[in-house]
Amino acid sequence: MTSKSENGSICDTEASITIGVLALQGAFREHIAHLNRLPGVQSVEVRTKEQLADLDGLVIPGGESTTMANIAQRWGLIPELKSFAELGRPIWGTCAGLIFLADRASGQKEGGQALLGGLDCKVHRNFFGAQINSFETELPVPKALKAFESGPQGFRAMFIRAPAVLEAGPSVEVLSEYRLTAGEQSVSDGLKKVAVAVRSKNLLATAFHPELTEDCRWHKAFVDMAS
Ligand SMILES: NC(=O)CC[C@H](N)C(=O)O
Image (cartoon, rainbow, N blue to C red; front, side, top):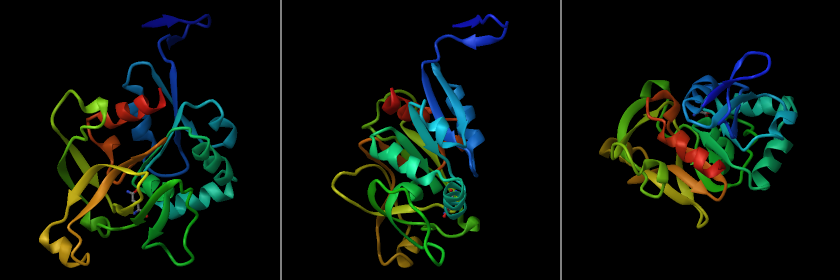
């Protein structure tokens, strides 16, 4: 339902959930657009620690995890982001955001990079190779998530210089897996599959980019976690 506020602007009176999208670098606008399509949800670009206070959940978008970590460090955001996660507030990391949330990462730039951590996982930062190896595929929907109860039984997964979860601890629930092709297995020590979507308590992480497809169900799933 929309109504006119006193100053005459149109506002959505149903909006009750506020989701922030970390807007330091990367694909934050696409997440904002998807979130705004969901009823009762308003989204905000987040650049300061003060903005974190009023959020029901935070999306850390895809982009370049080293650059994002450097900016977050320079702007003094790392301690606040860490405590956001530690306090059990919902965070969804996509692609670079997944790397950011992982406790352990390989394939990092020399000198490593700041990680927020919280997700008991080891990720490979560029598991699927360089930009040129980016690809799109269809994966079965995660049955564990209510948001996928309706709609097609598969979802489009776009992998762009994508990471993958190589090891996950007992607290981590694997929501989606990707089966490696014979060629991929031969350069991955015979690994047959990797996790590409995981959930652990207040943290959701996906190696692919739902914000670049028409499907809003991953955003809905995160809003469910934040509601
Ligand atoms: N699309 C992405 O977010 C790519 C992430 C990239 N592999 C990194 O290290 O940050």
